[in-house]
Image (cartoon, rainbow, N blue to C red; front, side, top):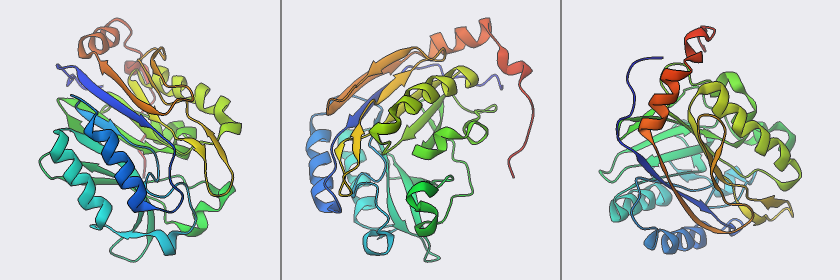
Length: 263
């Protein structure tokens, strides 16, 4: 792992909420009300497919890459002075549909990550094209890797390698498999010696699937800093740069990690 490490603390706001099924305008209005009262933070995290719920209606619901939600995210980031991120259904320039996370900064920059692992048990791979590129963004010196839901199950893709201080997962992770969610998230933190932040939704979707929430932030030893449980709301925490650096110095397991390259 490189010597580059964060020096300033990082403030997070996790937004756990129900989602209006297939109604982007209603969801944008709902989250805008929540963001108005979010308070001081550096990064706001919304769930996976936060404008529609987890839907396979990609043709009907896809927005252009620079569509209304992209514009809205930029506006919200500028308005509250913080990065705002979450995923939505996008049709890219090649006409392919993507489960795409957008990363909007207060300065107007818009980056994206396309979900790599598509949930075949729901047929997601039949309606969306998989992503091929990792994304690492820097915020206040923190190297952050955003990932989406089913990606959590694949430790090689989640592997921090030498460039990640915070793994970030946005999800629509259903209640029947909440035990997997609550076990895999600490594992990703422990094995990568980094913080993990994960935002899920609550309520039920248009297919009747229930969601238990369990949004959380874990430290580099897998210990919880925030546990949202089943409550809807905005949950705040601050990540300590000094504690992360100190732990990596005391327990440098990353020096013995197996080297590999993802093609």
